[in-house]
Image 1 (tube, rainbow, N blue to C red):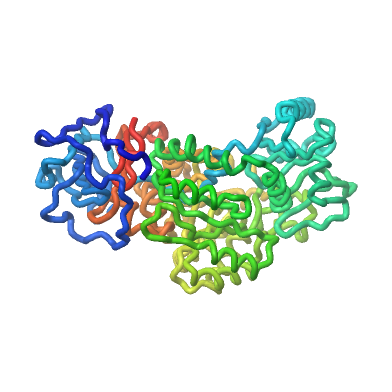
Image 2 (image 1 turned 120 degrees about the vertical axis):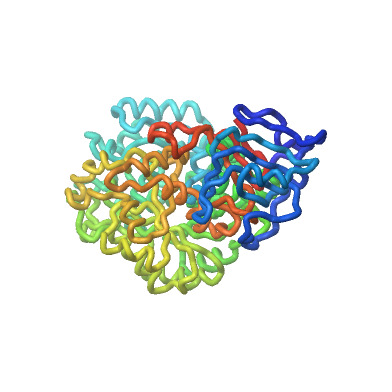
Length: 581
């Protein structure tokens, strides 16, 4: 499947004692087969009369199974768990071909799920240069000039890295700065959150944007006080121009493919991540074909669920028909196309997150100064009614209190009630909406691995939101207390994908901190539920698939700092080792 003909344990692992019982220590049989079985696990603790292909003993095994949270041993036959219990009782599963691993007290737990990341965008070499978050005008000009010299044949110069605040504080027009650097080729530079683009005049010309252009759905064309274009394109205005730039690259799909194979998947496996959701699969940009290629070549080392991007500017009937045609959820495949990614609003620092009350600063002259909508509540309801029956679950970007409220309204009004829609980011949540998540069965997906979500950074939002609305941002404790199903994810590369950083932050961000057990559940079983695979993975139970990680320390005996510094010793997917230290 992933690495053919590779023994499960070709080397002794640091800190783990491996022994082949009797005289045969051959590799487990069927270790590279993906299970076709989508049935729920048995309710008994063991399957009688079976010898294991692998046995892990003498461990501190955290199962994320509330009926039996801890165990000493796990037995696996092929890719399925056949026993969870004591090391003594596990001996009955040892046969001639069983490979036994002594965990020597190390912690084992289910593999981590990250239900919101951008693996193709973050792991590819599609961008040609990077600029610092903040720099002088002369420095920016020099860096872009150098990028032009280094990429003489590029149709578009594509960069990354600035902060929107830096552009807004420039004395010179951002447009003039880029034009001084390069005026004969289009330049586009993505801001760190991807919610704005800095472009030169040539890029505006090729995109057909001029002084009299109207703002697109879900976006704003930046202008100065004299209504002249300033070179900043907010939200969907920038997205559409980036589409033009990306389509100019002849090697974009190959770069995406190599990024996945050579960096992203190995790095995720090293972090103990066994399942992900691609939270923005640009199906008009070749992303779906890239994922399908990796799957067809049997190179996936993750369970992958794709969230097809819903283009705000596209005709609804045409887009709905296209999305339906792309749906795939074969039970025996590691790759599934069964989610759709919607934005209902923008972000706070752009003043584009949808708010109930106006921002305290008016940068974009939006009507009411309450942010914008990529998809209105009415349009979202239309898509829910059209796509739920196909099997799609929605991953809905919602940051402002109005955006969150409208997304919840849409689900309440249009959903048949058996889908697993989730709202992601959840930065400013109206307390009146806390209980609606549990009541409506809407999953609350949050990211806390980034420093900017820590309570110490909340005051930075006061100039935009005022003091009251700048408190209790990303209120994971309040949501859990109101019976919301919480998932924790990274939004990589906005935040690190390392789950141990996310866990450490989740349990220390007073007053919106949760317990360690709640954080682990959010990264495993709850996230498996969001991906419709909680009957297969997400906890260590008999009958489930062996997606497991071994850690270098027991998280429950560790300090907050030690948790953040945890390393993975081994990662298994379907009973096969995909990473070992």
